[in-house]
Image (cartoon, rainbow, N blue to C red; front, side):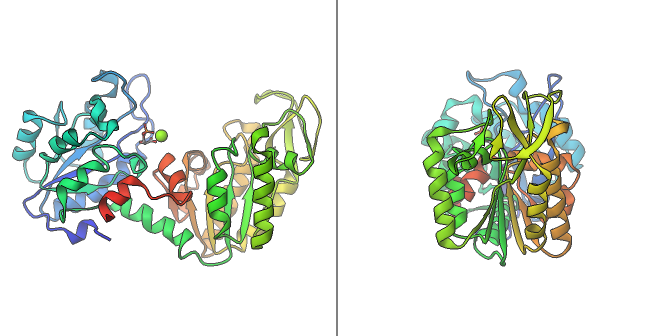
Length: 396
Ligand code: 3PG
Ligand code: MG
């Protein structure tokens, strides 16, 4: 694997594609800087190796060119603070000013270019635009795992202008290595927990994981499509009727492959989608009309405890209930705690996908699991077994 250590960076302008797509509030303050923090080791490694880091990123989804609220200038002071480095900013990512800034950057400083998506050509994967971007660096490093599923100019197309002078940064390298610790080198028993609202967005992941895991825990809103497919009454719970037969296929395939599937035996049900709703605990296949399952029940939680604690490898993607609401957070919280406990007993655990990452952070357990992914959509596609364009551009 071409990594940062395999390139000679001394005296070079090192063009690094980062994913600084961080959430900002109305006052344009960063509400979660994890993605910025994640790139610091790559930036430091570039500087330590004698290179000049020139960072490029997108922020948000600007529709019509430049917009103040999507400007990367909003990140400059925070980047200075967390990196302890001087950060220069140039209000363009291509053209004379950008190239000039890249050539005059002082040793030990960081140059940040303006939002790549202020140009439509970025998302279009435009080759001429990628070529202009390439003028900002002597070598290219892709560290933007969160955007690696996009075949954009800066994440994929640009790589062809750096033959023999391109590599993965530390984030992208560790995302790949950690997913491989589950999907390729996972020690048995391997347990995947797949939750979230929609089966439709997880079906490819389920199909891919079935070939690799020993246990599959299905939870969250998507579980009710499975329960209905099995003949259960699910009241007003979330369901995707178009996916009932696929759910049956997944269960049949699991049986054929000897994968043990856990569906929630019981649920916390509610008479409205609200933290103020009336609730009760019932069997998941006996949910009355007018009620919906919003969390795993105590039996469901108890039944996965043992299997998680006995697992050597755990992958978690998607919450077990509507954990954002206090009343329906128990199932997700318990799973997070079991994963932390299994990890302290020696299991390898990977938390991948937006909502489960948010959950593990909410329960303050992010530092008690083995690896928390920085990618949302990219992690989903990775777990589906797809080759990500941003990865392929480096590996060839
Ligand atoms: C993300 O947050 O999902 C990545 O930064 C990619 O952004 P995008 O979904 O707008 O392409
Ligand atoms: Mg996205």
